[in-house]
Image 1 (tube, rainbow, N blue to C red):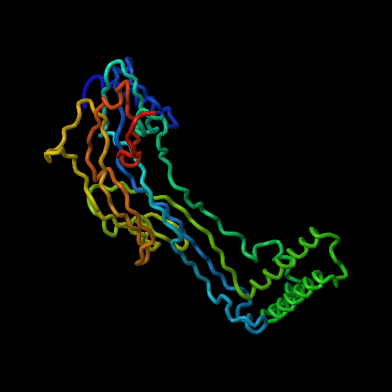
Image 2 (cartoon, rainbow, N blue to C red):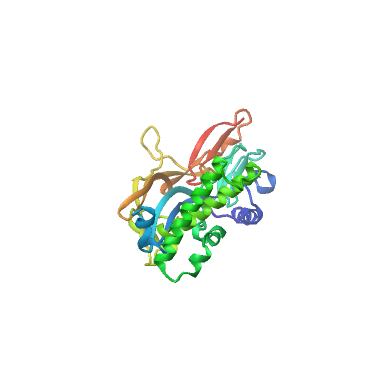
Length: 361
């Protein structure tokens, strides 16, 4: 809608939005010639990906694990692997600069509109507006130090082990030390130790240190496994067409979640199937309704099924409303200026659709 009033209000709205960090309340009044300016959204699809990256490293004495520890499950070779741990799909509204509107209300009225920081309508005549918030998302977790990267690992190496030039001899000494540590722990717990700690806290410190030393020596035989998680949120703004097998990122065992054009990782692909395209409402005669004069524009969204695949398997799917698959219609502005029984409405900030409409409190 093009007019001098629209241009002026648009400029004011842009200034307000630039400084706002939270939702803003605009009231139609004489200063704005009883008009309110806002933008309808396009729907972006946010895809939060959590990848788990694991590094396995064989121990120095891997070939002696069965002989000295009776365990044949030692890690034999170095490896790096990746898997998708979780995928969260959710919509987010982005203000469409090409879809700006002016709602014109009756002179003398004072309806108000709650807008998001981007200028997307959240509600009219009610401050109980839906918050355009994302779901709780996972956070990246760095790899914890392995048993061989602790101070206890240095304490566990005896002088004889350090001096020996034979791997076989060092393995034998390490195994002997493991059994010594186990015996020391058993003596402390049974009260048979000559150096029993004076209190419970001191005892726990000693026991923890013995356990850490044993874990370090055992890791020299069994190897270590280090795991970290990488999290990245991808944003896709689809048009009104189906999507099949679009690579949106890749999962690298070395670098985690990388860009789609980085061939170092296995592809993460997006599918979008249009389920329903919205149409304009009709009257009792089946005729398309007309847009109300000065009406409050909103979106009747369509729906699509969004799914994510990794290594041939579907890892997440969700049905979403999309503004791009919808049509724009309007509410009669008189609904919000009736002195006896004004209405209120709440909008979905992700699609621009109506969530609820009814009497204003």
